[in-house]
Amino acid sequence: MARKPRLHVEGGYYHVILRGNGGEKIFFSSQDRNRLCLLIQEGIERFKYRLHAYCLMTNHIHLIIQVGNLPLSKIVQNISFRYTKYINKKKKRIGHLFQGRYKAILIDADTYLLELVRYIHNNPVRGGMVKSALDYEWSSYQAYLKMQEIPFLTTDFVLGQFGKTSGLGRKRFKEYVERGKGEEHQTELYRGVHDSRVLGDESFVEKVILKKPILKKPSLQKIVYLVGDHFAVQEKELKRTGRQRKMSRLRGIIGWLAKQLEAASLTEVSTYFSRDLATMCRAVRRIEEQYSKSKDTQNLLDGLIDQLTQ
Image (cartoon, rainbow, N blue to C red; front, side):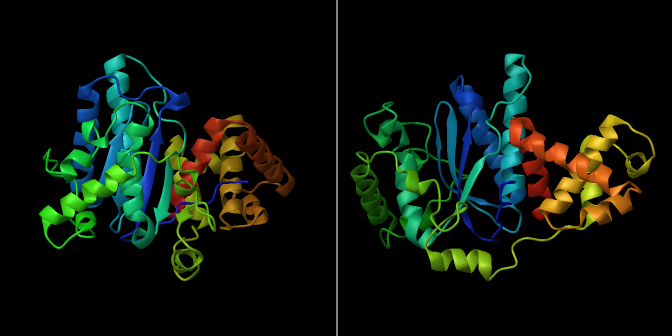
């Protein structure tokens, strides 16, 4: 079964986690972390979102992002693509740097934002890297306490929850974060109870999913165009008669996407391509088998679903 599409809620807060492929390192020097921060800053200027907290560990990244009217997928894909390109060039290598699909959880900021900010700032403490979050240079914690200047970080909203003046807010925020340094790993902060994509109570889930038209059902034509663009093939090539294996696979991908997103029936897809229904069904079944067995196929199809539903 395909993963559920991402949720886009304008103004929503997301806890984003990017992990190194196979648990491998994604940072090899301070220069690398500085480069990622530069890419984040450029992304904020381009995509108009807010970053409320971050922590750059050795093999993974935590970000708390508040999106604007652009979907989170554009933001994170821009960061991951450009940083991977930088590392691969530096290391003279090719391939994936990050592990598959990034993890993103829409959070109820009223209930969980402060807890999450404290949790990710204490991540280096739980990892045994430092004794206090204050000692870790590569998180947003020092900037919250005015020990660093990070112009692309938004701190006012969180600090405003702790006091009416900035000085009082910082003092209470520091006490709050320090009280959490003994906390163990909290799996409940990584997955929602009522919906795995949402960290919040049932009423919050109902608000963001059931009462808002979040997902747009794409047309079959849009799916055809996207797949053609992704694989650099024209629509006439997909419709051409013959038994080219590549074209058969791409028609199978289109049929699979249409089925998953309820954009069209397989009968409609087979008619669109002037193919026998049985042939189309076999092509879609092959894609379903590949999805269940191949991580690369999962990442490819999940990425296409993200683009089609945003």
